[in-house]
Amino acid sequence: MAIDLSLPPEVQALVDRTRGFIREHVLPLEDAHDGDITAAGGDRFRVELQQAARDAGVFAPHAPVEYGGHGLGMCDRAPVFEEAGYSLFGPTALNIAAPDEGNVHMLAHIANPEQKQRYLAPLAHGEVRSAFAMTEPAPGAGSDPSALATRAVRAEGGWRINGTKYFITGADGAGFFIIMARTSGEPGQRGGATMFLAPADTPGIRVGRHLDTLDRSMVGGHCEVFFEDLLVPESAVLGEVDRGFEYAQVRLGPARMTHVMRWLGAARRGHDVAVAHVAQREGFGSRLGDLGMIQKMVADNEIDIAATRALLTRACWELDRGEPAANATSIAKTFAAEAIFRIVDRSMQMCGGLGVSGDLPLARLSREVRPFRIYDGPSEVHRWAIAKRAVGAAKRALREQ
Image 1 (cartoon, one colour):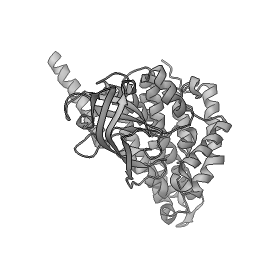
Image 2 (cartoon, rainbow, N blue to C red):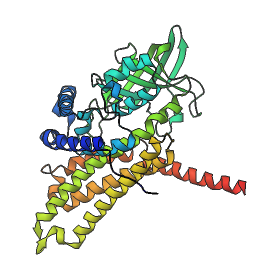
Image 3 (cartoon, rainbow, N blue to C red):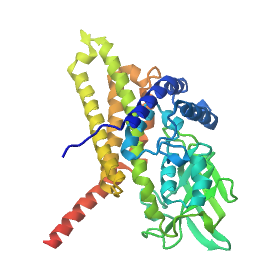
């Protein structure tokens, strides 16, 4: 059976336009502000970038066509998102940065028509930002979502929500929140979660401090958020009551893969910078690129880039077929998060002192990609899940024998 990895002409054209837009328009802005989106102007800067992306015809490649996007599936998104990720500001420009990209995907699949009009349409058009509020301080939900402690109880006219969240990306300045709250059961029990939609100006929502993290490229930071007797109507329920954990999987698998796409682009930029450097830098009687130790690092980077793309393609293929792809996305995410960091780290090493200086983008790329080994599930948690599935399958096979 032949496997065709070529792109449809219209997708290849979008990849080419995105590549040109990022290199000509976005990279100079990233370099001017050292990849710090707040220093560049935050939301005001986001609006300007996104208008430039609209003008270039590359805006919202993932969003449904009826909401102004290109409607690309997961496999077709991969090369476009990778080109956007070549600049740390690229995903924001195309409106494919976290958490908005994942929220667009989830709302398109789960929201009812009224919710799509109120929340999905302005989000897809870049008129507002959003936040996905699930992670909580210990002992609440984190890598183990079943520890969810934020509670929603029925009240007159709807639901009353109380709880504390943190590490909520984009919370400062978000137009609305998607809130994960427990509606049945107790922390530690599986199931019993519900998703709620709430405009950010609803009484009872309070955004607290920004947690100081390594990365600087996401608008709105990573914040504490407090829900204090937040009253939302019945119409705020996203999907059905008590099915929140199930719905989260609609978002999490694809969102992990789009993280891979974007940060693979960043790693590729680091690799390109390093290869260009060693191809012309002289030392020890030759060009650095002619030395065996440097060539090994170049080759290992090429291998990590190719292997990441291959695992990503497999996971996206499963997702496009409507499969859960839990194992494929865990494998791709774990390998990619570690490979991407290795690529940038080797690139820094090849460039010596320049690699850790502000004269090249490598130091800031390292700063941005390191958290990926934790964001969207630490590598250790994914390895545990992968092993649990493999051992579980072996036990079932033994029982059947």
